[in-house]
Image (cartoon, rainbow, N blue to C red; front, side, top):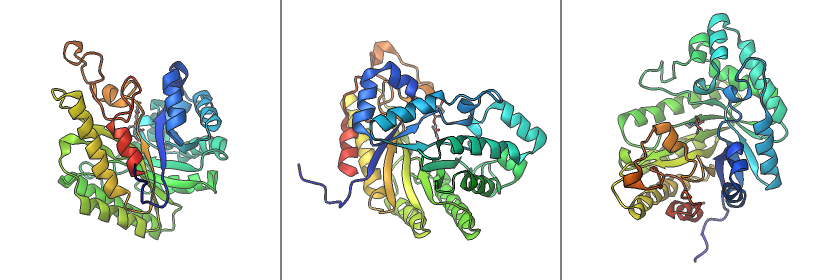
Length: 333
Ligand code: XIL
């Protein structure tokens, strides 16, 4: 096969859960051999490290880091502030006391512990909401309690906790041409510009890139311009959560896998012409453990689908065999 013409290969990563890796030797071998970076899928989130107030649970993070280090892999820090992964006790206290100290202690505890092994951190996850938000920002508890500059405060706090770290905002919903995503791109760019104008420590952005075959063609020019605008601000870009939602379960497996792979090729053709994009991480590895089934509550009808996982939006199938999406990734990076 012809060598790629790109001068350097990018980093390929995947999210992973150490509990699954420890119980599944095939998965462990696949993650270890196929990816050069891992993102903890859940273990670093606030409701995992401190699900009950004052009871810390760093074991799974430590073990995933040990696994990554044994395999010479990097670890991506995901995610410090995200409404959805904030434990109820903390949301309650934030609303009751309005005390930034709680957020500060959380950020310092987590980043302080992993400062020497994790270089990149998603400080705020999913701050944008152009439909129900306020000035394009999601009305989450942090926004309601501290105002829109909770984002600046989180970045400043993270910078104090780990002055060498690269700090990111991580966001979804920029890939398609519906009016919502057009507005989301604009809202994200203006947020970035505002933060940089204020001199807030922000070094990179995470583009989640949950692709979706139900959402129509990817507007190549607009997505390329969006990434260029981010690059022009001097920020690095990481594709942090690539996967593909597909739901035409009546098509053959081969057809579905080709559609998934084609969508990944189309997206990466656009995204990877942007030199500021330095890595691609898939949100999962195999249909065996895919979050796409669990989160979407798909009903698996064994009569119709056999034991095949209903959603096929990850690079390896449920037998850990590489699918066309894996080839697309290898070709692209
Ligand atoms: C998801 C995980 O995959 C699930 O296992 C968990 O229950 C909820 O979170 N965007 C993100 C990720 O930034 O953290 C989410 O991960 C998927 C959407």
